[in-house]
Image 1 (cartoon, rainbow over the protein chains, first blue to last red):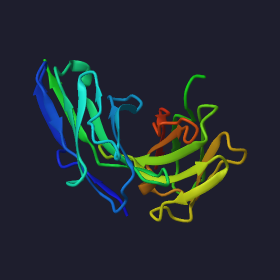
Image 2 (cartoon, chains in turn purple, yellow):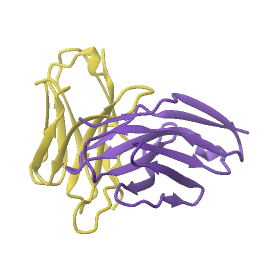
Image 3 (cartoon, rainbow over the protein chains, first blue to last red):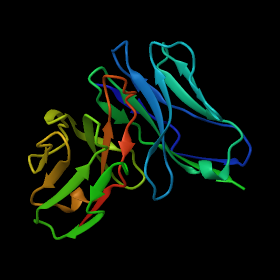
Image 4 (cartoon, each protein chain N blue to C red):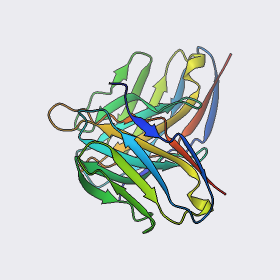
Length: 113
Length: 116
């Protein structure tokens, strides 16, 4: 069975700084997808960024980028020039070949003014 | 399309009562997922559907939980004989897979269950 582990329950950084959230996963599959989702306080979860395992190039979306290390089964999220609106819970997620999606326990990120 | 809709948004019930939640996904989405989320935790997988077919049900779910998607559109999640441990946010999400879908989940606002 696949598992997703986020080892940082909570983090705080100053506005405009760069922060990296960690995620590791376990799977025996070779083709899969990884995601980072954001859940702002009392709001719906939304997709931040997506990575296909067969792509070596790390995905980027504006200030958000990932460091995907397939051999190490590591998938970290880097947020550059952090903004107050980035304050949220961040969840790492894994999608297997059957399209079942499981989530990590999350990292609560506080951006401080 | 206004996105994924869940009803009711909040349900308070007494232990032992049955409750039913409804999810209306984005209309062209063929996949529908149910998750349970407790405060400060990640979404816990419950079950998912491809159109009307239920693909998998979590082994964590007892027989008191059942989900349906009868016509491949909306879905219901029923909890029978509720227990206090069932108190949680129940999240529904939909996605379009195959034919150009990206696997991105679109979430509803959730249905919060409080069992007294």
